[in-house]
Amino acid sequence: MFMKTYFHQFLLFVCVLLPAFILSSCAFFQTTDFPKDVPYIQDGINFHFKGDGRLNLYRGVPHALVLCAYQLTDANAFHQMLEEKDGMARLLVCTRFDPSVYYAKKMIIQPGQDLYEAMEKTEGTRQVALIAGYYEFQKKQAVKIISLPVKKMFFFKKAGGTDISLYLSSQEIQDMPDQKSEGEK
Image 1 (cartoon, helix red, strand yellow):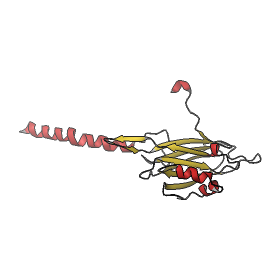
Image 2 (tube, one colour):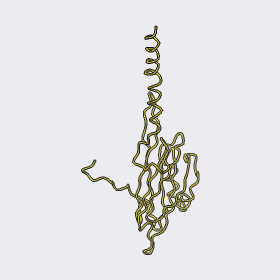
Image 3 (cartoon, rainbow, N blue to C red):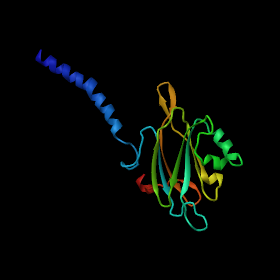
Image 4 (cartoon, rainbow, N blue to C red):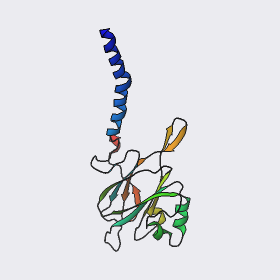
């Protein structure tokens, strides 16, 4: 009888409490290269922007840069707005201009600044579009559209969150240069 009680307690611990503890403890560990003291949302859209010392260069002087991030279900309306005569200016206002825009966020980056921002990912978001208000605006260099990774959940697929690290040079949005040397990868 005495052994049977301990055996039941042991089974309860192994089958119920231990897996529950392991699963809940995973939420406490941030699985990212982002520093621990910056805004970060698990399964959200997390940004790291590094502004060049010569950010948004105009007449030899660096300036702050306005950057808008859009959560989209589809990028078609974003592209159409970009093609309109005043489209770039309207996109830099950072508003929901179409039903395909779920959320818009305006950020300002200073020359040489490291900026970390986090956004909750709204349900249905499939892409993130970024537009930067460079003085010498070129669509290819000032617009970036990023598709969110797809998570497979049993029988269906769902767009997951992501970490986005970008380098903002004097006139262009670029992927962040790798911090590790080739030998460390």
